[in-house]
Amino acid sequence: MGNEKKEIVPKERVRVLVDRAPNSEGDYILYWMTGARRTTWNYALDRALELASELGKPLLVLEAIRLDYRWASDRFHRFVLQGMAENQRRFSAHQVAYYPFVETQVGEGKGLLRALADSACVVVTDDAPVFFLPALLRGAVSRLRTRLEAVDSNGLLPMREAPKAFARAYDFRRFLQKSLGPWLSQSPCEDALSRLPTRPLVSLPAACTKRWPPATSALLEAGPLALGRLPLEHSVGPVKYAGGSTTAEQRLEGFLNAGFGHYAEGRNRLSSGDSSGLSGYLHFGHISAHEIFRKLAQREAWSPDMLGECTKGKREGWWGMGENSEAFLDQLVTWRELGFNNAVLGANSSSYSSIPEWARVSLELHSGDARPYRYDLATLEQAGTHDDLWNAAQEQLRQQGTIHNYLRMLWGKKILHWSRSPEEAFEIMVELNNKYAMDGRDPNSDSGILWTLGKFDRAWGPERPVFGKVRYMTSENTRKKLGVGPYIAEWLGPRLDSLLP
Ligand SMILES: Cc1cc2nc3c(=O)[nH]c(=O)nc-3n(C[C@H](O)[C@H](O)[C@H](O)COP(=O)(O)OP(=O)(O)OC[C@H]3O[C@@H](n4cnc5c(N)ncnc54)[C@H](O)[C@@H]3O)c2cc1C
Image (cartoon, rainbow, N blue to C red; front, side):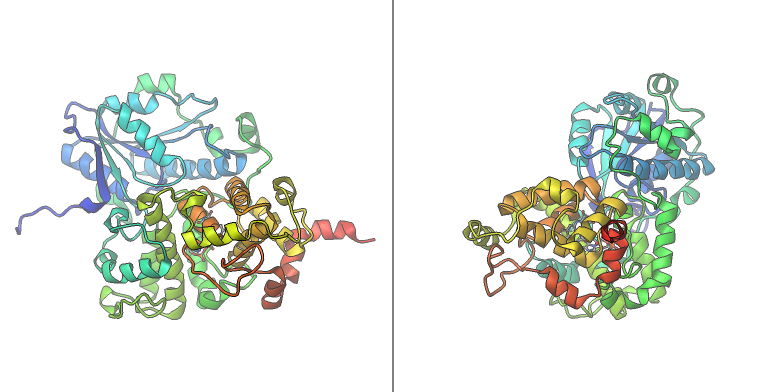
């Protein structure tokens, strides 16, 4: 027992998808980085380094981006490319071979993974139930002849440790309070590249680089010229903030130092900085939930023995931290991981049919109700409604790639109110959220959008037109609750000015 080797990566996080022995004749361990696009706090990287060390082989990291994903635009491409430029710097500082591949024509990358895998001992990749990644992984399983392991680095709880898909946040929270404790003392390495040096790979495989040339620095810089040459949706332009782990870490530091003192009530205020602004970085894997949790726990001088004993699903009290930290962790852990839980264990978790029966029946019953206003996708997309608060939220989404936390709920509820049917509202939300939001195309896009239609919620009374028993929200009440003037001026300013005589 005493001599048992301790795994660096818990076995509950590793899925062997091509079950073959490692190819000892291979030239390297290939880490195919798809979901956790970072060099730190990354279980898949830890696993690849562990194998490299065990087999005495170098590590090769492939990070690629294709062109034919839905909603591909300058906005998302630039964010990912900036992250890749940074990963290249970080890997090269540790003499780890890094292969950045950026398609310049649709389909150009076809065959690269297989070609690299054929010379690998083992392929390690990310197990992320995000957007098209599960389909990509299924494709790899059918094509690769080399051992393939997929590693779950998504959240504090290994996704497949949950017994089922939870239908309510309350039930999931209760489950976490009973089961998460032991997982909180484990995390991926903060700086695995320094801890586990591997033999460097002298050069990238020449046969591959000839056919699939690695991205140039100019392309990774993602300036307007480089992006302009790629067949992307150019009308969805880059945002003002940069992608990559350094910006994400700075944002986290800034948030913990400044905004954090009033998160519990500040999250629903309209000033910026009262929430972390990390969801886009989490979505693209530029920061890890483990890093966020550890840094927060350090500030709180927290240790696992401070966890509360009451496991009845209450929002406050279980973590044994201050009010703001507990409120933040309820979002970062309970709500975020509920999305992953449903994505992996739920049936059709991204479809309208996954809303609960009571909500579907009630919305159906009210589908013939008169709508006070009706807007189509084009009008909504252009922020052209009668409601300037809603228009301001839509403008923030178009320009900044995010919507303020509270207004995002109102944004969705009003789309339900103004669409011909709840199914149409769902499709409009998916289109707008995923086309513009930096954190879109995520398990939590499904959670958030479907929440506006009753998922993860309970029935509310009295029944209202259009909403039925689904929780309703109004712009009027939101105006009363929040001081919306400066927010509207910020996002509609130029438009309002043009209306002045
Ligand atoms: C209609 C609608 C659509 C949404 N679409 C998305 C989406 O596409 N992607 C997305 O990540 N979130 C989505 N959400 C949830 C939530 O709005 C965002 O996660 C949050 O606004 C992100 O801002 P932040 O990083 O400053 O959050 P913070 O308040 O700082 O929270 C920290 C982290 O916790 C997680 N989190 C916070 N709130 C939620 C929530 N309600 N559900 C799940 N996780 C949460 C996020 O990862 C977030 O980064 C949506 C909500 C609604 C109502």
